[in-house]
Amino acid sequence: MLTTTADRYPTRVPVPKPSTPRTDPTVWGSQPGPLDRRTLIRHSTTGYSVHQNLFSADELSSYAAAARGLIDKPLLRHDPRVIREKSSLQVRSIFEPHKLDESIAHLVRDPRLLDRARQILGSEVYVHQCRVNYMPGFTGQGFYWHSDFETWHAEDGMPAPRAVSASIALTENFPYNGSLMVMPGSHRTFVPCVGSTPADNFRQSLREQTIGVPYPGSIAALASECGIDQFIGPAGSVLFFDSNLMHGSGNNITPFPRSNIFIVFNSIENLLVEPFAAPRPRPNFIANRDFRPLTSIDS
Ligand code: 6CS
Ligand code: FE
Image (tube, rainbow, N blue to C red; front, side, top):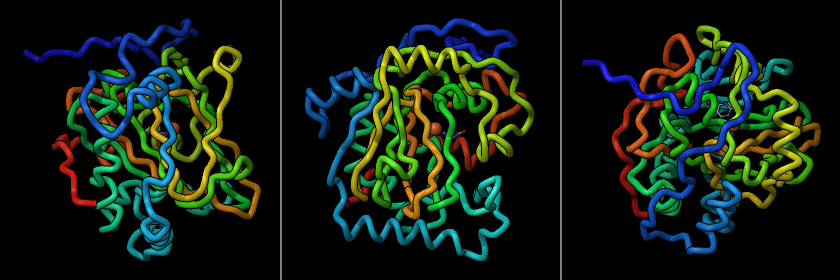
């Protein structure tokens, strides 16, 4: 008998629906790990935590070089994993860099990241999605306010917000070069979005998201309730943020690129099912369906 997973976070609805409270924990269980109690409480309350100096400058510059090297790879010129900016056609994101570069393959299995993700999610984890967002200087287009979980629930069939993103700064994240803005505490509210999901929506949404975008009224309400924080810091800074945290970034008109690697760890207790609000699942490079748990490498 085919079992269907209950949809506890309905979205992509025909008419506006009020926001609903999150009915899941943010930090799952109380497993031992590298995060102390104070950090776990802060992560649970605000929906994010910043981890400075996890990687050495040498390690970081090799990851940054690897990410830059992917841009000019002739083999990738017409690869669907390379997403270009709508206006400048410069590379906006490259998905699955961990399958394209050996050093990034190691990074996703680095215990300095894995052990934090396992502790927050209270289980073994696998990579749901990995991408480099390049946010090039002068022409980098931003990402409008959104909850990643809203998209991963609707279009990838992620049942619950039991996933955490690690954003690793490859270049300095200044306040003015398109750094990530987050609304602390917004992860505790689920904002249903209006509008059904077109087939193959990802072909448009990864360049500019128009479906799964909360109404300005909901964004304003959350912003006045939560405020807005910015993730800024030197290359090597790492932001862990909850899958349902409301976030966005502005355009980058400065000469300084804001390139970050995003690794999304999903719990093996939260495996993808059929999309909750889309005609069919997205491709594997956006929503990985190889659910084998990650094993750590010696860093
Ligand atoms: O659709 C997605 O999965 C991607 N879109 C955004 C704006 N953030 C999360 C993810 O990279
Ligand atoms: Fe996002």
